[in-house]
Length: 257
Image 1 (spheres, rainbow, N blue to C red):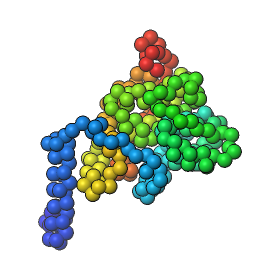
Image 2: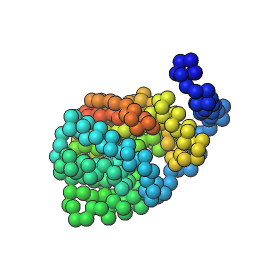
Image 3: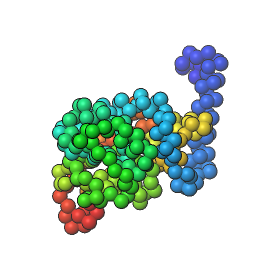
């Protein structure tokens, strides 16, 4: 390290020992003492909405820009939008300003987050919200939409729940409607960042399960055709964003979608 990077001995030692610590922590967590993550407590969303980490406020700006660009490119403006898992939606204001949707409906099962959102809604007749579990979403119960999206939702379930949560996006769409799903993916950067936060006791999402692209695509492609994919590296806790268009339901696909 000293030869290749011309670092002082003290800094080289600090960097090397930090890297070894994180690698050791990750190896022991993921391979030696691997356990079922879903015996852990669920994420405390009341606490999260009470005090949102300042880093989230920074990364949301990038996520919003990416969302808006994807919607404009593949879905169009002035549509009926449903955000699943939005609670006190951090994307609502930006989307209203840039895309002028006909309606915007938020679905979440966290009452505290929805209460915060309702305080912001005022008398805007375009915006509404309802308390509902994503696993119970059905057409007719929730509003129909031209675009359904979620950010950081489907990773908080076991594999069966994740598949159901993905299908819920398409359940609310007519053929030709768009679904946008963003979820954490276990890149090397995600693993290092998460291991660091867990080691420091800063990790607040015990039930978050970073998802492989293949698992998500297996559920998405049952109902829709993928139009676009992108890994959001600047988030550090890297997310994969997928845009898909619902295809006409036929035979077995009709039952799943």
